[in-house]
Structure formats: C-alpha cells, structure tokens
Amino acid sequence: MKRLDQTTTPLFSALKNYVDNKVIPFHVPGHKQGKGINEFREYVGNRVLEIDVNSMEDLDNASNPIGVIMESEKLCAHTFGAQNAYFLINGTTAGIQAMIMSTCEPGDEIIIPRNAHKSTIGGIILSGAVPVYIQPEINEDLGFAMGITEEAVKKAIKDHPYAKAVFIINPTYYGIISDLKAIVRIAHRHNMAVLVDEAHGAHMSFHDDFPLTAMEVGADMSALSLHKTGGSMTQSAVLLTRGNIIAPEVIKQVINLTYSTSASYVLMASMDVARKQLATQGGDMLEHTLELVRWARDEINKIEALYAFGKELIGLPGCHDFDETKLGVNVRKLGYTGYQVEKKLRNEYNIQIEMSDLYNILAVITVGDTKEDLQALVNALKDIAGKTTVEEVKNATRVPYKPKLIVSPRDAFYSPKKSILLEDATGEISAEMIMAYPPGIPVICPGEKITKDIIEYVNILKAEHCQLQGTADPYVNHIRVLGTE
Image 1 (cartoon, one colour):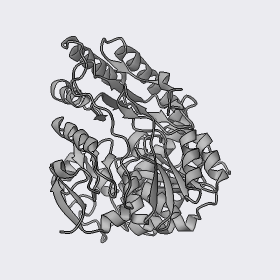
Image 2: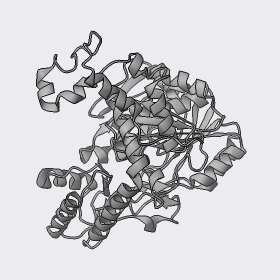
Image 3: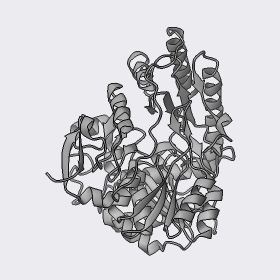
Image 4: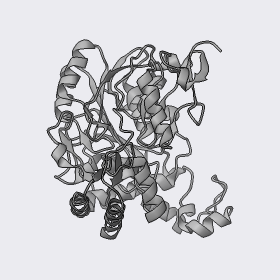
C-alpha cells in the first residue's frame, strides 16, 4: 500500500479555505454561516457555523466523493489498514446496517452473537436476513455476557453451512474480546464474510497493548465509532472494508440508500482531524491513556467491596483478550445496583459515567481524559464505599438466556400486531425490541418468544429506573406482539 501523508487534512483544509475566502452563501443551510441563528452562534462561536456548509465543487459530495472527501477517506483507510473507508454521519448504526445489507439478501442466514447491538437487528429487518444467534458466554459473577467462543462459531457454521456471514463484536461494551483471528479463519474457510462491530474499538490500531482489530486479522468489513474513542464528534463513524467478497460499488450503493444528501461537513471534518491525530500522535496519546486507566483500576481495587475487572478475565470462557480502556467496576457488594451508583455519582459528585447495569458501572477512558478527572472518580467511589456496609445487592438476577426465534425479524416487523400488557405476554411472539440503553443490547427481539424470565428481568430493570427503549409504550407496561388488532 502506497504511503500517504498523514499530516494532511484535505477536507478540513478545504473548509478553512472556504471560510478564509469569505464566500457569499446563497446555498443551504439557511442559517448562512450563523447569521441566521444568533443565540446559538453566540454560545457555540462563529467557526463551527461557518464550516456547516453544503456540498459544492471544491468541498466534494459525500454521496459520490471524487475530491477532498475521497482524499480524506483514502487517508482514513490507510490509517486503519483497510482498502476502503466510507465516512458515516449517522453513527456506526449506519455502518452495521450497511454491512449486513451489502452481504445478505432476503432469506439469507447470518450468524450473530445474541448480545449484538440493536442496530444489528435493524440491519436484519432492512435486509430480510435471518439471524442465527450464538449465545455468548455468561459471567454470572459480573452479571454480563462475555464474547463468543471459536467452538460456538464452528457449531453454528456446521449447522448452517449456507450462512452468508459471521458477525462479531470487537470489543463488547465491557471490553471483552473474542478470538477474532480464529473466527475469521474459520469463516473464510467456509466462504463466509466476516462483519465486525468495532463501535468501541476505534483506538485499538494505534498501540501494541490493545487487542487486534478487524482489519489486522483480515475481516471483510468493520464499522468504527470514531466519535466514541477516536476523538471525532458525536454521530461520526467510518466503515472499513478489505478483500473482494463484497464489491465496493455494492457497498457504496447500499450506504447511499440511507445516507443523507446533506451530510454534515462539521462531522466529516472532525473525522479528518481525528484521523490525523491518531495517525501521527495516537501511540503516545494512548500510552498516556493506558497509564491513567491502569492507575485508576489499581486504586479502585484497593477499595473494599469494589472490583474493577481487567485483563485477569483473559482465559475465562468467552474472553480471548481485553480492552483496558473500558473501566468497568462491579459494585454489587456495596448493596447498590450499578444504576444506583451511577445516579449517586451524578447527583452527589457531578460525575457522569458511560453506563450502568444491575451489577456494574462503566467509565470509558480515552485520549481526552486527565489524571484530575480520574482522581475525582476514584475519590467519589472511595467516599461511597466508606459510607456503605458491605453486602450483596439484594435483587441480583441471572442474565436471561437467548429466547427462541419463531418468526424472522423482518416478518415480525411487518406482520399485524396487537398491544397487550407485558405481564400477560408469556408465550407470545414479540413484535418489538426491549433493550436497556446503553448498552443497547436487546432483551427480546422481534420474532422471539417471550418467556416469564424475560418479563421478570424487564420488571427488575423498570424498578431500577433503567432507560428502556424499543417499545411503542415508552413506559414498557405494554408490548406489541404478533396477532390481529
């Protein structure tokens, strides 16, 4: 691969040139470089509104890039070891859906871990694919799903030899890594594409202490949330591809099915600069990040009743490697749920963590964190623990195992439905998803049979005031199921 100059920012430089030239805008957006929205401009500043422009010859077009956007995407592909890169302005959700829709036609099977993000189910509904779920290993002590094993993938391929693709998460929200290299080898041996959700792994290519990435082990496609751990702005992501299993022209056509014709130049420019930063300074910046998170993890593990899990999980079922920047802390011995600790941190210490569940809280540590910030988190956890009698959380529960798929998600989505009380839904086939967000992993998906265990688990989440999504009823007292109105 030809070496490119990673110190350049073609798109960002073109935007700066547009602003410097003081172009008179008779084009959308209608705020006309901020002059039409004064209150907002006074708060956020002029520059961000001056570069909030629309496509034109010198600024290229994201739907069919042939200029500075294409140059920026080539630099991005080179940075991550891919053959092609596509800027996304609707998050990794758009990338995941594009991967599935590029690979699967209606009726095709795709092998997927049951703890995949809700966007995966969206991709299945849009494509008409039929999911073959693999149950990830469950860590009962920590209360969450780990990765999937090589043996589970082999069995799924043996049972479904005509599946078009294997879908993998690398890493999970909690930092867990499956044996991606082995899974890619197995899948390719059976002529199946490997699609990888790397929403939380955009940083992993740039330091040797991180797990291997999809592009490094020869996967066919991966979607990265560059905004999550790579430094760009919220909603910006990139789709990476390599190999010839899926033709680039097909991928481009699929992306454009749902891509805005008014892609945000602010988001794309932030990706251009974030890519440059990672390519030129990523190693040093991530070395500092690892020093900080390792210090914090050690300090938290000195606090009685708290357990900041890490690389010691490697070797347990479903954990081949671990991303240390996911600072997960098991809090069940405090007698609090993770949800309660999250609220205490925000309400009493002005600290907002990434997510919580029944047993754990999770802080995502990136190149933007400081020692002072992590010290504040450690001090807050010490204070909470110091005011608490050590005990087990009272409402501990097992993570529900995968429900039985009765109807394909697409058929369930388009079938007649009726709304019933969640309490009365045992044995019904769900027409909706229910998920805690974050992390956005469905408890039940369209087409799956609702069990008593699932209803009990959802009620526990509701009692903890967890943010539940997916149902037409915002309070999840009712659920839509297959049937007639």
